[in-house]
Length: 164
Image (cartoon, rainbow, N blue to C red):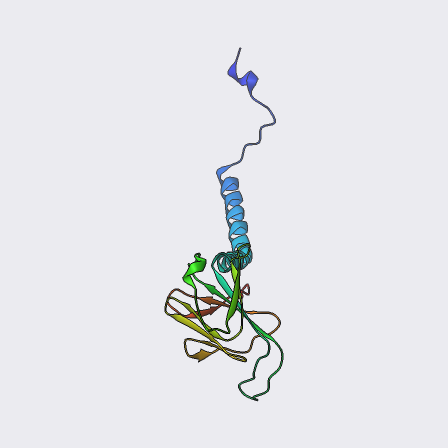
């Protein structure tokens, strides 16, 4: 018996030029897919990290507009402390400051007036303002202002918009 009798006569044989062309198409499609999906993957990862750290949700009954001086709608601020997963690392000062911890979400719910401290970072809460390390924060709203507190003390927006 000859070895040639076992070969499949319908077998597709590609030349080296065809293999290179198919490889180039696959690489171009893969690169294009990374460009399109990359920002969404980055935002998903950023959102996951934000939610995995200990968070403090501050609710003020009303906000005071620094420019006009008017007091209006309720304000919400959500702080996430980068790298912090220990709820005991947050300190509370003030007899009017009330907080509860939700273990299912890893979030402190805070109302009242007082001082929230984490490492060197201080969040001062009064009746109509939130001050982070002596810097007044912009007005919040019904949708909480999401703020990531970096380990170096800087603030970064917790929102993510896919950008190319």
